[in-house]
Length: 100
Image 1 (cartoon, one colour):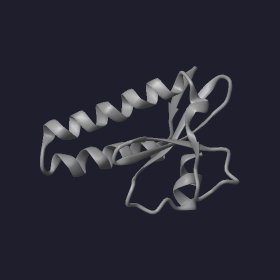
Image 2: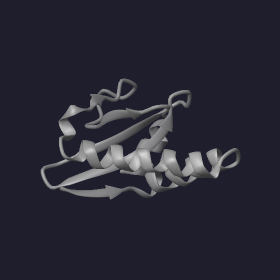
Image 3: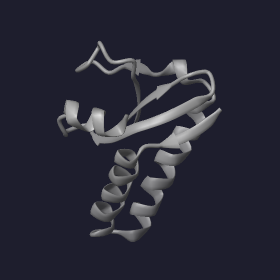
């Protein structure tokens, strides 16, 4: 299955890296690597995620790589990372639509 990172997801990942790097470049790199590894693992069995509780009508799922939520969609051939949000952030409909 091919993994597609939406522009919104790539932007989120860069923001996470920049924010954490203000305190520690090491931990910033480590967190980004953990998120990427989690995406790679879940793409092998995408049904394991949970529905996005704020938007149950959306055909999306989420998994956690604490303290972040990885929001994704999938079909038989592709796994699409829609966005990544901190647990404390509000997940807006705008972020979901930018990630589609």
